[in-house]
Length: 626
Image (cartoon, rainbow, N blue to C red; front, side, top):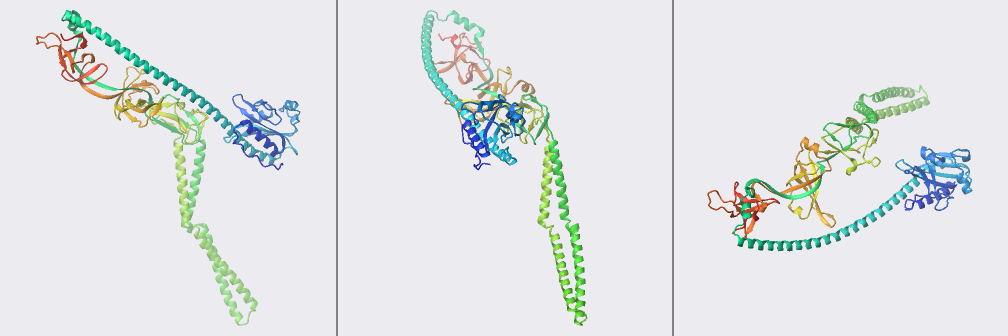
């Protein structure tokens, strides 16, 4: 083994070629091999490739199909191969040796695995000095491959980030250029609109002047032209005043969204055993959606129940400790030691009396005293043992046992609760939202949020998202002028080309207090919630449909209204041409002042001056006072 220091991760190297070159150089020196190569996996072409390998010219690379050759076989199977004589192995390709003049005597090849367990390539070591690699060398190489995998993934991630950053810079430049072009076009359009308005006003002024002169001349020649009289005499020229609901509002554009989104997560880790839904379809409340396989969970539950039984047994043993076999044995041992002690004590007293009479030798008495001391120590030890055994069931140990029972009980209850949630059902009627249509937390990156039968899902991972269609919401934006007229709770009428003839009614339930700049123009988020939808409306309205919103800023019920063309201004007064009453001797329209309220593009509210049933000229231009 070479005395070179182990190679450290080179994860700071931003260039993949530099990373691979550093790894192979240090790996060869540290492992004591003549050459080493790292092949990376290209998943798009299903090939192994390496831009750098010892003995390889700059700019040259080697590509091998996965499954071909020794490196391709290791990549496909994930097995580690140690070949002492490669030329005897049919998988070995000697073409590279012939081209380079190198002779491969022994070979070791193993996969490089990422932290997630994915094979990202293989490493190949050629001609280990001193013979093939030992098992200790293989263990060390496994550690070094883990470091190399981290370095390679970091370099690949760095390259990806650099490409992404470059793409974003280019896109940002294009956006800024387009924004500048749009601003330039907007300025030109504004100038054109000003010019067009000025030309229009001039044209209307000229035409009005000509019309006035023509009318004046005609009126001077004939006091009441026949065509005007015929128009006034036409019943269709008159409008009978009536009442109707009138409203004004702000028109916005938006898209239909669900009222709320509920993410249904997996209650435990397992395999999807059943799937009863399709993404994007409507489901009803209580409908089974999926079932998670409970095999592993049932094993965990049995283990937890076993632990609970043991904890309860231990608690019962400690609570009844004074009658336990351990205490009974200690008490019997103490009784036996006490009886032996008392017997030895009596024997010692007798021997002392005999010794005092000179009947026994002093050595016999001394031996009896030593035996008594030993028995006394055994007696004291038995007392301590009994005390220790009884102390084993202390208050603290009993409390700990109770806690263990409670913990085991909670664990069993939790697993039983999870087991009861293995069948996922719809909590309400709604639509299963496509995962790629909006951000979803805890989304599985491998399947992009789509799950099928057999897929393994982690605990807490979102299986599906359910949109509530009991009512719908519409998100839109208003500019800084319109937002001033919008308030919480204002009624909103919602229509759309996708659902003609249907008008949804709702209210404003969200107003953003902070603007979002779009092309340097401030816009404010506005949210609208509809009333509960009828079944027919739920069948017609779909998520994502475009919608027109009319936020009602003013509303008058049973208002007296007239056509907007019927109202004109005469000497500072707002007037209409009113039909004379039947009892009046006047036959021509009568100039009648009125007080106006709100107005729309077609009608004007009359606050004072007219009553339902009165008749006014639909178009005030049909008559002119003589």
